[in-house]
Image (cartoon, rainbow, N blue to C red):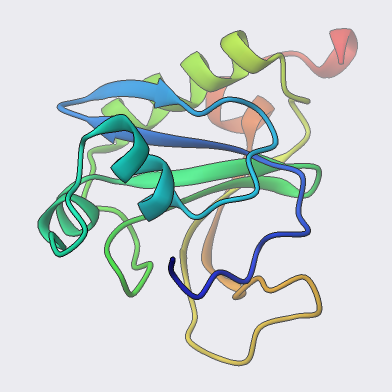
Length: 135
């Protein structure tokens, strides 16, 4: 089992494989790596899956997307990123006012175990040009 710091955050995880979105069951209390191994996408000693596929999670504070063991800004086009954000918003009915955060900064974690994001991509409504009157 990996050293996992986000156990106390209610979140839904996701991964992007070949530009397709895959969602975890809601509120899993495991790491992405543990989820990937349960799905059979990654072996115990295989680091390539985590390095290759952008992943992230949605919680009450935002939508976080990163890639690799160092949780860097994902190598993904803006077009695909917007498609993934739209898919997440529709499938999970998340609040349009939440911000999308890319990558992390390697400084001490906060009380919840989160690293601060490197980039704030903006609110879902701004990214997708959705009117906020419904949410």
